[in-house]
Image 1 (cartoon, rainbow, N blue to C red):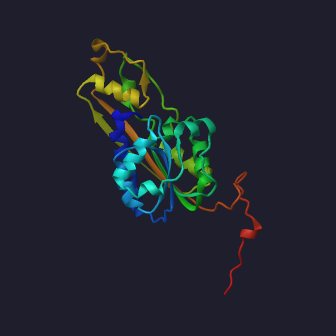
Image 2 (cartoon, rainbow, N blue to C red; image 1 turned 60 degrees about the vertical axis):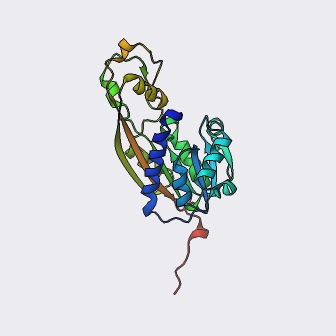
Amino acid sequence: MTQPIRWLQDEIADRMLQKLDIVKLDVRDVLVVPDFPGMHLATFAKRFPHARIHSIAEEGSSTSQLWLAKILANWRSLFRSAHSNLISSYLSTGKFDLPDNSVDLVLSDLLLHDLADPKHFLQECWRVLREGGLIAFSYLGPDTGKELRSVGPLPFQIKNLLSPWDMHDMGDVLMAERFSDPVMDMEYLTLDYENSALLIADVQTLKLGDSASNSSNEMTDLPPKLTLEVVYGHAWAIGKHLAKAQDSVAYIDINQIGRKTR
């Protein structure tokens, strides 16, 4: 996303952290993907004051921007920051530049809908999470921009989200990828616009459309609002020593079978 929609990233990130208030987790290492220099960092630093932050920055964010934002949020975070990379590196390699079992929390804000294969992202999160770690995420669901599909013609080409998964789809995939106790939630946010030019700018930024025209005649019939379906979820990485189930049968290492003693 770009600067005009930064407030949305911050708002959703803050709501994600609020939803984690009831979660008890000892956090030493956190992977933030994508990391962006927003105002949410102050809340993040307060919530996890001793955590080491591993960053995968969104496109367009410079290292200096991220460092400055973290200093403003909490200057101590500068000295606890660890790996830092760009999201383009993950998109090209499909890998986080982190070893197995190296983080306690993966926090992903408004990314999954931009990935062609979110399942692979979840698999990579499973790899880097420690036993008992947590993944928490948000993304835009398939009802996002639904009012644009009911009017026409439009001065831009409507695009489908790369990953049109609703929260039930995501919950099923989390279970299939061995995550435990997934919790899914969804809410609708409605953005109201004073003019069509502002709406079109956000449509492009959210990657819901492209090839916008600047003709005022073409923009007069656009709806004055835009609906965002925001899906939230979190799940635990538990039982990482267990083999992945095959044909509905789970295979357990015999060394992990204990005997009850009195």
